[in-house]
Image (cartoon, rainbow, N blue to C red; front, side, top):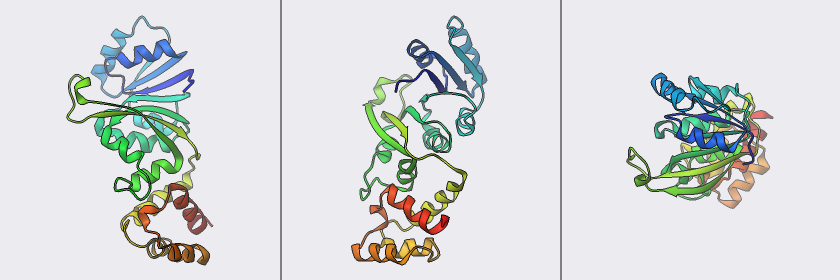
Length: 226
């Protein structure tokens, strides 16, 4: 990703951190577990270009308080969705993340596919997501219950606070994802969508789950942002 400064979420014992420090100019790494942060400080004590922070990495990402070109994380599987949402709502423009393979496949799912969901649409509205590699659970120790994948994420639409409504809009839309889009969209926008858009959706017979992230964002902008 051509980064000079990296923000790492989840230091752990510092193994990924060591690799990052050899590849970039500086690393700020955040670990929420104070015991692990202490161990990482010992493991990384001779590396000059790293700063270890004991704190909530998700909050730091969302608030964009650390200057960085890229966010990197061997993401704990229980916070995969949370880190992606925090990333979307941040000012960071790129990330490389290790996630459950199932989550990664949802993120790269095409509109109209079974895996395509509200979460897929939300993340892909603001980010381009690329699958880099997949790994068997046997590649890790301790071994997790599921396989993993590495994804690369790049910003395509800047986040703004008025997009907080967009999450609610998607929740409403995808509550009836297999129904005709013009009916659901009309209800979820309280009839504020221009008639030509409704007519297009009606004539084309589009279903909610076939709408692309860019189409969903345009519908939101035209109906709810005016």
